[in-house]
Length: 77
Ligand SMILES: [Zn+2]
Image (spheres, rainbow, N blue to C red):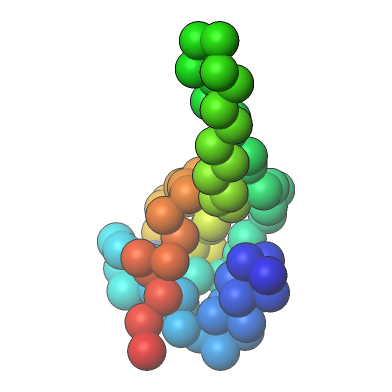
């Protein structure tokens, strides 16, 4: 589950703000997105599952916040 991964990354301070490099403090409005594509007479449904979340840095006066599908790029190991 993506939400579980995000929550864990934040709890373990493994998700870092790209602006100040401090651990991101907050996630909200998590949503799974499903996109379907239809092609002419043949209905081809392509489900691409992604998840979108709003991340907020929340450190000091850092204003960074982003709604993104590419949240995994902020997770470090
Ligand atoms: Zn920040």
